[in-house]
Amino acid sequence: MKNNTLVVILLVAVLAVPITGCGASSIANDGNNSVSKIVPLPDDIYRYQTSITLPDGRTGETTFALLEGKVNIDFFCAGCYGQYYITFWNVPNQTDRYIGDKLEGNRTTDTAILSKPLYKHPGGEYLDNVWAITCTDAKGNPIGVAEAHQPYPVSYNPATRELLIDGFKPNHQTYFSITYFHSLPGHFDVFYSSPGSNTKEGYVYDSRAAGWVVIPPGQRHQIVPPFTIRHVPVILKIPSSANIDSGYKFEFHITVEEAIIGNVTAVQTKRAYNQRWLISCR
Image: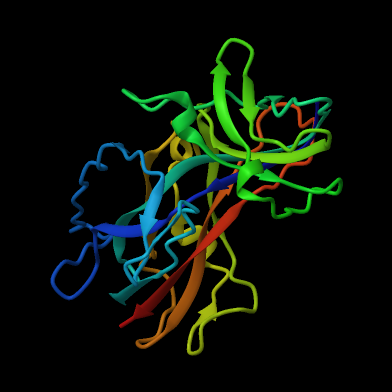
């Protein structure tokens, strides 16, 4: 058995929640009468979940796609200060591809050495976290198989990362992929980014915003355990000296990007998500 390709599917869900705003009812400024209220970030939350309920009530696969949304901040102005936080979720979803053995005789089993250690849910079993085993052709394209030859996991050795699989069709060369949840923490970079030319209608990109948006240095790189929700502060502070007309609207993005750690020895897909921030000034 040969591990042919490694594809990382680390997905992040991102939200933004205000801690301190600069609106009509709560205004902070950077003058001599500056008022600011720093609220502690929420604690991490552990959320083990292997399926999701779709809006129509059906149960779907745990793809954990980005909870896309924009952040609207109205009534901001020169001299205003607001502290917010974004929330993202580390889901350690991994897919490995294999060129298996030629199964001779009546043999229906094959083994796979997983590229990352299989996750074990507290109180659960390792095999609970094998999401799917898919038969493929020699190029890695999924192929359908009869129910009698649908592969399934039998056992896992955490010391060797060896997964024993049964259900293959005998007297055939096996090609398959395994999707599973692993136990390693995720590494993510959080940073300000430009929307480029894709700004929302009525909003502009303001290059000055690069100096108005602050993510504290100690928060820019995040190490997040599996199935954990993490919060990162984002500070928006427009100096009182900024020349901003009432009704001015600008846009910027906050990016959460997977950071590749260590030597990359196989094909790896890097995921990044942009969250749109829309600022209206009075």
